[in-house]
Structure formats: C-alpha cells, structure tokens
Image (tube, rainbow, N blue to C red; front, side, top):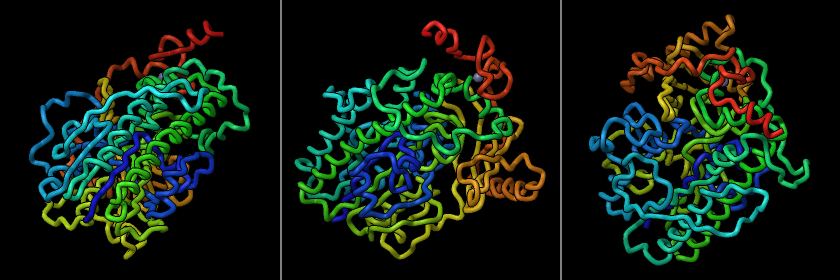
Length: 473
Ligand code: ZN
C-alpha cells in the first residue's frame, strides 16, 4: 500500500525552521520529520500568495496557465479549467481515496478530493502573551477530523489525505492588532528573537518602485511602517509562537498515523504555500517581492520509501510535488505538467534536484493594484522584473543570499543582467506566458509620497497610521 499524508502549513518560511538553519524556533514535530526525512534545501513557490500558489501546486501549472492570478473570489471565470487534470483528479481516477481537511483557497483546484468541512474550536491559549488566535481555532478542528479519518475512516483503498493547516498565517492578524506598536508581552528582552541580518540594508532606493511603495499598496506593510526594532522583534516572537502552535497539531496527526497502524505504508510530505517576510528588508507577510523569506518554503518528505536523514541540494518548485507523488504511487498516465519528479532524490538515487532553474510570478493581491512580475532563479543568480518600466533586480545567490545588493543597477553587471533577461525570456516563450504584453494598472494615489517606505507619512501616504499613533502616545 502506498498512502500519502500531505501536511500543508500556510505562510511557513523555510528560513524559520531548524532544518534550514534557524536556531530560535521550537517545532519538535516538524524537526522529527526533517531529522528522519529528506530535506529539499531550495524549494520555491510559484507565487508568494495563497490562492495562486495553491491552484498552481494542485495542478503543477504556473499561475498564468491556471489563470488563478490573485486572491479574488472571482477571477472572471466560474470553475477551475476542466482542461487541467488536478492532483485530486489523477489520484481518485487511480483508485485513491482523496480527502482534504482544512484551509482551501484553491479556486476549484481541489477537484477530485472529498472535501470535509471544518469549524472553529475555541480552546485554552497556551501562551497568554499572544492574544490573537483566530486561525489556531480552525487548525484544532482540522487536526481532530484528520485524526478521526486516519484511525476510523481510511478504508481498504490507498489514501491521499491532506491536512491543510492555517498557521502560522495567524501572524497577519497579529500585525493588524499591533499596528500601533506591540502590546506588552511581559517577557524579557533576551527572550525576543534577534532581527535578521538583512533587516537593515543599504540600497532600498535601488529596488523597483513597486517594492519601495509597498507601504502604500500592501495593508499589512502599512501597519508596520511606524514600528521600531522592538516591535519587529515582538512580531518575530509571535511568528515563532504560531509555528509552535501548528507544530503541536502536526504532532497529534503524526501520533494518530502511528496509532492507526498505517505509518509504514505512508509517505509524508510537509510544505507551505509560501513564506513570510520575517522582517527581512523590513517586509512582513507576503506580497509581490520575490525575496527568499517569502518565496523559499520547506519541502520535507519522510516515511514509506523515503531514504531519510538526507539533504537534497539544487532547485525544486512546488510544481514538482504533483509528478513526484505520481511517481511514488506508480501512476504513469498523467499528462506532462510543468513540474518534474524528484522521486529519485527521495529514494536516495540522487542528492541533487534536476531543475536547471525555478520561476515564480506576481500579478495582484485582490484590490486592483496590478503590477505583473516574474522571478527567474538558477544556482548563481536571482533575476526579477516588474512590468512597470521593466524595473529589475539581480542578486548573487552564492555570495549574497540575504539579497542585500541589487546588482541590476550596477554597470559592471550589464552582461550578466543581459544573460538573465534572455533566460527568463526563453522560459516565458517555452511556457506560453503573455507576461510581456501585460500592463501595470493602479490608482496613482499609491505613489504620492517621496520614494522609499521611510517616507510613508502624512496625507500622501495611503493608510498612514501616524496620526493615530500620536493619539495613542
Ligand atoms: Zn507609502
């Protein structure tokens, strides 16, 4: 029997986990998966936003191919294209019980899964300092129902069961509730995590305007713009807390799998739809920047058929999950999708992923602020471009993984920049992407103050909180 248990977290950055070098977070159950499993060191989402990312990995297609481009509930068409075979379609057709519990945000790309409803369960908070717990309550019910499924409902057929957990996405609500500065947690300063090494960076004014004005276009970013270092450290403390919260649920699910007697027949895959800014470049949550913290996600396989206790280098995309799971299940009948199978890497036949590059896309969140962007990443450089004056970034990923210096503005990198423009262009042609005919569209009110997020104040700043902040003080 070749069962699959998928555990998805929302907004979990690879940068936040021990498996990827973080010493501050406490997530023993995720650690147990990575200690015994295969860690893909460089896994990337195809879009740093929930709904486009999810529609993409459920179908192994890029957002421009699924046409699910933003978080809007209406993308201008009714159903996820029946031309595209989803993971649920493929596995249910091949005799699997496909069950999904938890966060959806899929725009119909979960077709083929039996979707179970879930609700909020309000339980005791385990850290009284953190008062924002909305999404935690959903995760408790998702966990409860997954435990029931694994122990009582799984039948004689193999299963593809998905526990789609919301945390650490709760950090979004935390930011909203602390927009005027952090509440007193009553904890010592030495308990607060340090700021990342790229919290301060010198070339903010060398970044695309789209990024310099994220304070006006992105609500969560605007809420942090008057924060000081202490606020950002409290925010990181809260983010790690929510990772601990979801880790606890993951522990219960893993225990249930063991008690069900099905563990030896089950491969487990843990990943996230996208990451979290984590105060890198002073950014929070996720939006249209393609930096590591929001775009690089955990991808960990363990259990049945997995040759564990290994790390796989090279680049992988969440689009690779679909063909990898099909390979594991012995399903060969699927149409060639955009991702490639990493099954040889999982079973120990190779320690390097096969992708020459990965790519990601941006369009809009949901409020009509459209600045299409593309990211192209290979082992040497990360290249990004936005359809607004074709503004670009180029980062040396071997020597500047923190993305502190945008090389695209440096004349001595002209030749390399030209090479990467060409590489992206080839990828765009290969995937029939209409990127170069897309246009930026937004109200000019979002670009009225002087460039740079530090200038976000007064009547020219959209969603400026400085007046309310003065009232508070
Ligand atoms: Zn602004």
